[in-house]
Length: 288
Image 1 (cartoon, rainbow, N blue to C red):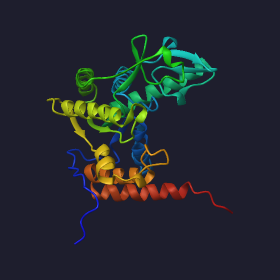
Image 2: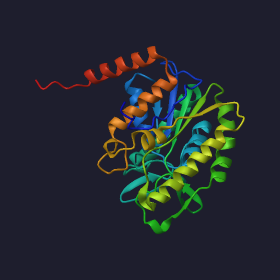
Image 3: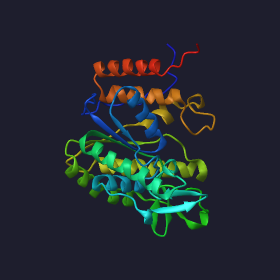
């Protein structure tokens, strides 16, 4: 008998079961975008990254606080750089040459996501890195290519992340008592600080989530091992893109399949598969 050529990561079934009536809100790194897009293609109602891509736990927490309170961004949250107006709380995809248009785009999504979060059954949170950039004492979601000397860069501690998220989870339970929260750590490697620095960052995130999941909360919290599936089970550069840091579409497909197996009934998985195939056929542009 040939020995196995990988080390399978065991993913236990989640207590909640996702169906087409379950609203989903997804926040976090670009890996949250990848999985969220596959959910949308499968016919699920998904509010996907209403602030754009967010990488660190502080920015994700700030976004959630703003969604719960339905609190708009204002002129004090804006900066003009390279002929564009940017929000310190949003990804650059929201930036526009006109300040009023930027504010309108940001705040329209905040109001939309506030309603979605109120009705959702599942909140997916993907942390990418424990490193943060601070400007005038505030963690920014994006530096928007401003000069680096305007920012201070540091790594959050486990204690800091946990103390930030504990009261936020309690606030979420009051806001939406039916909500379950699924934490993941992005398998995308941040190698600016080297392989060891990336591992320290990811370990900080994993330890923080583990401590939050061990708290006795009124909300159900779970951890899905996307990071371990890509790094330990797949563990091959064939499963990465050309930059050798981002998982390939095939790797994301594998992770999404395991996610489906963990939190969907077989009938829902089949329906989602059929809906995704139909959406692909509908989007096909004929040559003639």
